[in-house]
Image 1 (cartoon, rainbow, N blue to C red):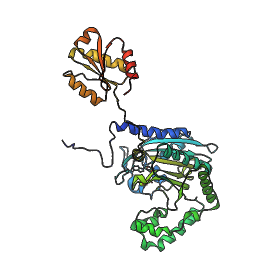
Image 2 (tube, rainbow, N blue to C red):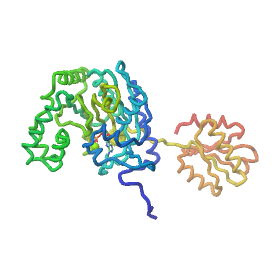
Image 3 (cartoon, rainbow, N blue to C red):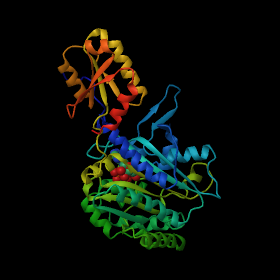
Image 4 (cartoon, rainbow, N blue to C red):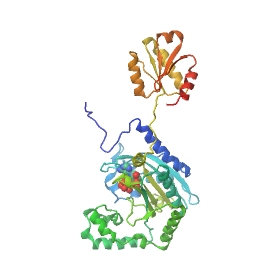
Length: 426
Ligand code: ATP
Ligand code: MG
């Protein structure tokens, strides 16, 4: 039978046994952030649309066409979060966590929503983990954050990864560069696509990462921001590169890495991998020194990144470093052969669980064959059988379904059974 209602396009159900493996991939990435001293914040899944428009930027793809925006019953306009930085900063400002004299490190994770064209590694609901460092930062803090993502690349054996690095300058040097760039784009308009023309007017830096091959060619000769940085931004960028060199973290420079969000300043970076096909970026971020002030908080430097868990999954799958699926999510299934054994079976299941053993029951009676089939379906390693004889003698037959070994146990000592189950491998 065809279901009449399906999941929305670009939304993926994650089923067993992959769901718990997906959570493990998320947890393992989060534990790298814990090692870096980041503390987790739990953020709402939707916010006022104005928050995203103001932080991400009105002329970005995300805000222009990718947000799931709705009016609630009170007539207020909200959007499902397309990313985490805006919410995290909103919360940090609202709860007065920011302090110009000290650095704070916060992390988040969870689903994000963007109405994009779904393809491999690009979903409409996807999962990110992200981290933000806020306070009196130095270029060393940029290096330190990048070094944590580098650690993920190593720990998870990410295949053929590259760190791409650029600087977007600061409010002092970017306006002049922008003008130089616009002049170039206008002069070369004939070689650029329609989208580039629109962006030249609205968001000229975004023209640089146009994916159309003929545009890419025309843009190779475009003025480069790193050649138009003010002294402070140039020194900042040099310090970051020196730090990465010092840690032996390889990177390549790209003057065309501008990122899709307007709030970035100074250092911007992406970790990409050839193994991902067209959606090559698995982690990305950068400095956003003006953003906290823009959102009504103290004027503090900030840097952050986000990584996509679905893409990390794909990469770890390729590398063969995904966590193994749980072999026996249920350790033991209890089967009463007759209806009058049901209560004893329920009681045994409960006691096994109380002793910390994942247990299920197959209460429908019938042939032992059906119990074996159900046990296999549950992923149980043991089958406990309660027949007439066992009920009479207060015992239970416990069969190891892998080895075929079978043994009788007294029902009044469930702890012993639990110990035996825990000690057996499988
Ligand atoms: P992309 O280059 O894929 O468009 P982006 O620049 O929009 O990415 P960010 O907003 O910086 O990405 O998000 C950080 C990370 O989140 C990305 O590197 C990617 O791993 C993941 N991500 C972003 N959008 C999606 C999506 N639609 N589906 C799955 N993962 C995504
Ligand atoms: Mg995108």
